[in-house]
Image (cartoon, rainbow, N blue to C red; front, top):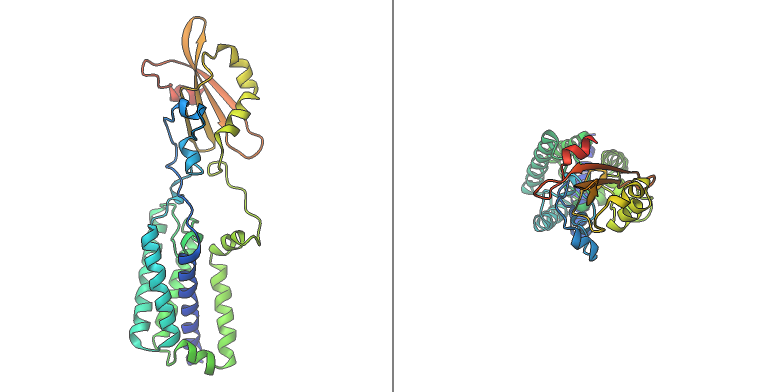
Length: 296
C-alpha cells in the first residue's frame, strides 16, 4: 500500500505545480485598488469628467486587493513551478523531490505568516485567482502539500512511469486527494466565475465599483439634496472622497449670512442607496470638519 500512496503523491504534486504555474502565467492581472479612504480629489477634476482616484483603480477596497507579489515575481514563480512540475513527471531523481519538498515547506511558512499577520492579502498561490485573504483552509492545504512532498521522497518512479505502470488503485487515491484539494481551494469558485460557469457574487459595498456619475445621480434625486439645495453656493464640490460604503462630497454653503459647508454622504451600495447630510462650520483651510460631519 505504501508504494501506491508514494506514487500517488508524485502525480498530485505534479498536478498542483503545473496548475499553479498555468494560473500564474495565463490568468490576467487585475489592477490593484487604491488605498482605502482616498481623500482630497479636487472637485474641478470631477466636473470636467476626470474620474476620482477610486474610479481609476476600480474600488476603494481594503489592502487585500493589493497583491504582495509583483507581476514579475509571479511570472518567475510560475516558470519555476512549471519546470518543477515537469521534472516530477519526467524524473525520479532525489534532487527533484527534495526541491519540491523545500518549495512547499517555504510556501507553508509564507502562507502561515500571512494568516498570522492578518494582512488581508491573498497568498498568490494560483496567481490572480488567489485574491481571497488567507484563511485556515489555505494553511491546511499548503501543509498537506508539504506532507505529500515528504511522502513522495521515497517514491521509486517518475510521474510518467506511474501513469504507465501504476495500479488502478493509484487512480482512486489520486481522485480522492484532488477532491480534498479542491475542497480546500477558494480559487475554484473564482475560476468558475472567470469561465462564466458560475454567476459572479455581488461585491460588498466597500469594494463595489461606484462611478462618480452614479453618486451624483443618487445625490441630486435625494431629499437631503433638495432640502439643502437653496443653501448651496456652488455646484462644484470642494472635496470628494470615499471611505468604506460611503462617498463624501463637500459643498460650500451660505446659511443666515454665514459661510458653512454641507457634507453629503452617499451610499455606494448596489441598491437602496441612501444619502445623508450634515451642516458644519467652514474652516479657514477649506477642509471640512469631518469629525463633526460624522457625528452628525
